[in-house]
Image 1: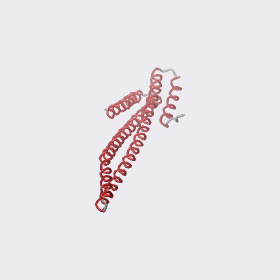
Image 2: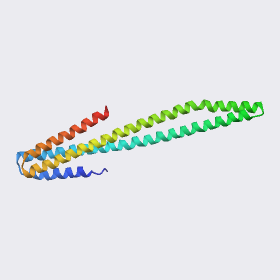
Image 3: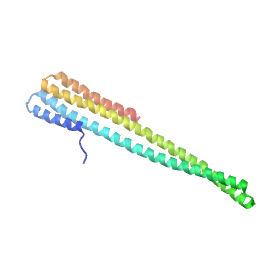
Length: 195
């Protein structure tokens, strides 16, 4: 079972306190308490979305590490074939028997023929690694923006609570604006980084 984040738990507590305040029957109190409940849900969604992006970050970075490992293995094979080619070339030059010389030249050519494909495969793996790293950075940036948006909504919940306690609607209007700004920030970030 997933744990509820501290900010989501706090938002739920605000909603519960607001529910008790709503029982007083005033229409402005009811509006504010309902908005607190909606803000709590929005804050929870933003927090969960941020955590999902963090999870994607880890997945992409793990995939990048795997691509780098495969690229390193391929480069190691490339280097081993280069060394084998060199050894067989030297063996062909130093061989006294013509058939041994020809065998070494043939083996050197075989080793040399493998290298372009290995080089191409290693470079492709490095490109894939770089792509995964870029994707991870995008998800990590999105994670931060969702968390910032969640913080704005959390502040808005607190302002709504102040509006209830102080019986001043200006705090509620500020809370509505803060919530709208948080939602706007999340959407703007999502569409900016997804484009």
